[in-house]
Image (cartoon, rainbow, N blue to C red; front, side, top):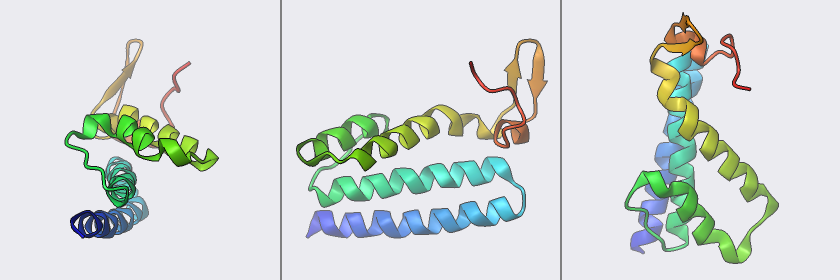
Length: 120
């Protein structure tokens, strides 16, 4: 029952995070929207892992923990989950800080709106 309770709490918090992300997006606070969207995805994945009676001690290994938890019943949709987790892992930390491209600096809000140059 312990894992199920954790899974439920993670999922409930993920639902709150997506609502926070939507509110931030409505206010054009893109860095905040990206942050809460990332939190939503991470907590939803944590919920899925908990349902499998696994526990992740370090969020830095979430991709591996997800892969391990579902390796015996992998579905094509899970590839998208890993892609999304990877994208957020790479980009959400930059959502609230200035970024650079060459010698140009971009304010934090540009890093989350797609108005800054994409990586090649």
